[in-house]
Structures are given as structure tokens and as C-alpha cells.
Length: 291
Length: 159
Image (cartoon, rainbow over all chains, first blue to last red; front, side, top):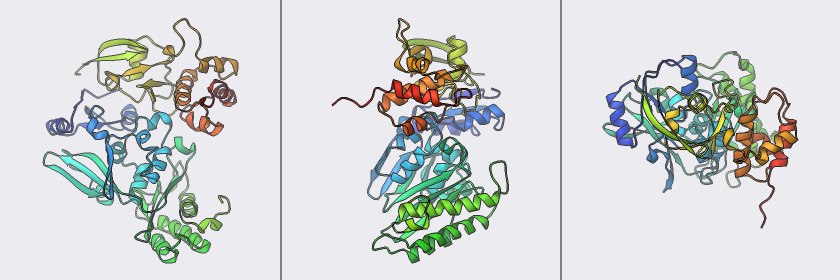
């Protein structure tokens, strides 16, 4: 493997921030599941790496008040059985293979920010907060803002914050080897029965996950919130509106080696309808194949 | 190139070396430790042939740098059989059930399945398929591997 002259291995967050300040432009290494293949192909010329694996404080996760906090170095395997965050757990279980889930991290998913990233798509639907820490302290950004602006060169992602679930959540995807492949299209649906709304994000279809706002509004208006049920025709319309949102998204992906664009938008609509069937009782009749 | 001194416990034996940061765990095992049972095929995290256990968790050794495994315990396929050479239940099942043909992918499957059955001693066929989804075999068509997994599974824990 070419490049990679040095690797520093800080033992604490404060040491990591000092190290980053002393070597601007260094690449952060967590699980390595994205960085190492990029090094092999030469896609990312890397001279200096800072390995975050020894920083125990970044692996913590916890619940306080209405919020769940997940340390940036928590692995997918750490999250796969977390009962407090069923949607996040379902997403974690759908990533890669057991070997990848044992090493890949939350912070790595945000650092790479692949438009096909499973976790990224769920975090957009969950309207997550991203905590970044630098020499002047920590600040929290909304996931949308984070994806648009990223973080400063002297900062690193230290945690993700999610509201405690107030209703069903799911994550569905289509890919060549199911979990082991990156998805051709994916759909995260988060239902908030307290605020009477849903949020839906579609991954794999554009340069970042796409929120289907008109489709979300349609569900908010047509669901029976006393029971959490959605009429079958409303679920069908939800799927159509999600497909439309994909077609009209800014910088939507064109035909590529994975799939034609028309297949992606169609698949997004089907996945959204299935997700509604899972999360909103009564919508089940809209999808006969998955009763 | 700044080299780093590391100590890794491999199959119960401490191994010390001074390595370049870019050295992968797979290359460390094969070149430095001369443990060539860990196979490298795709070298970018797709095929699973290089699977080893790090602190008990199945990982792809081609995606991990040796320095990241410092002060941790690594188990390779050479560490699976008993000291007298008696095959582990997983290894014996692969032989009995024709779980291998050319054998190149086998060390990765043995490691993945060993970790899977430790965590889930009575898996369904679906559990086995999902648990082995990170390993590719181009010979067997997987049926022999599934049969081996069923044979090797200890079954439900006794109450």
C-alpha cells in the first residue's frame, strides 16, 4: 500500500484534538472499512493517519432525558441490539457483513458520508444532531447542515444525537447482495406519534439522502393518529410521492453501473410503501407482497 | 516512514515487531508471523477470505492495520484446532460435509462460523446464511457449507 508515512494513536479525545491541530490534513482512521480500500486503490492519497481506536470515551452510548447519544467510535455491532433505538439497531444490522459491522463505526459513516450509506440515510430520517469537537470546544449541527458544510479541518465528529423514538421506525434497502452490498436504493421511515408526523429519507439516489417532504406531509394529513393507521390508498400515494421526490431531487444520480435512474425512483417508491406498511397499521393492504 | 513497535497476542502467543503503519494485519500474520492460513483474495473487504478474530470478533484482516491490533488478541485458523491437531467441531464438519473444494475461502469461513456458533449455538438456516454473508465461496455453491454449519452447531443450551 502506498503513502501512509505516519500513524498517531491518541488515547484520549483531548490528545486527539491536539494531534489533529499539530497535523492538519491528517486522515482520521476508525474502523478502516472505507479508508483502507480507498488507500489501496489510490483514491485517497494519505500521508498521515490518526487512529481513533484507542479512545475509549468515543465508544460510549447512553440515554438522558429525551435524547440518545452515540459515541462516534461505536461500531454497528455495538448498536445492532440496542433496544432503546430500534430503527438505528435495524439499520446497523443491515450494514455490510458481520466482519464489517464489528469494525465500521458511526463516525466513519459520517466522515465518509457516502450517498449510499445506510446509516446516513437513517440519520437524515431521524433528523439527528452531529456533535463535532475541536480546539475551542464542541458544537452540535443538524444532520442536513453537517452534510452541507461538514466540519472544520481541526475538528472531528465525536457523537451523534437522536431524539428518543416516539413511534415505529424502519430501514429497508435493495442491493445485489442485500446487506453485504451498498444499496441501490434504501428508505428510512421514522414515525412520531406524539408530534403526529413522519420523516422519510431515501438513500443511494442522489449525492446525499433525499427527504421526501411532500410525501411526509401527505401521511401527516391522512393518517388516523389516534390509532397510528394509514388507509391503503394513502400508503399507495405515499409511495408515488416518494418516487416523485427522488425524480425531482437536486443532483439526482443518473443511470450507472448499479441501476438505471428510473429503476431507482421506482424502487424508492416501493420501499417507502413497504416501510409504511411496517410502521403504520392499516397500510398493509397497500403492499400485497409483504402482508 | 515512522515505524511503530507493537505487541499482538496471536493464537495465545505474544508476537512483537516493529512495523510500518501501512502494514495490514493480514500481511503481519502472513509475513511476520509466517501464519499463511489467513488467505488474501480481494484485498478490499468483499470476499472474507482473510477473516480472523480480534478480541473474539470476526474482522477482515485486510482492512485493518497491524498497529490497530496492538495489545489485542488475534485468533487465526491455525489457532482453531486443539494443540494435538484434533480438528475443531467446525473444521471437522467442513471435512465431513464437503464444505470445501479448492479450500481457498475455507479459513475465512471457519473463522466466521466459529464466531457465529459461539454467539448463537442453535442458529436457523437464515441465521447461518446471514452470519456467513460476508464470505464468498466460488466452488461449493454453499450447500455443503450450510450442512457443515448445521452439523457443527452445538444446539440449544441445556437448561
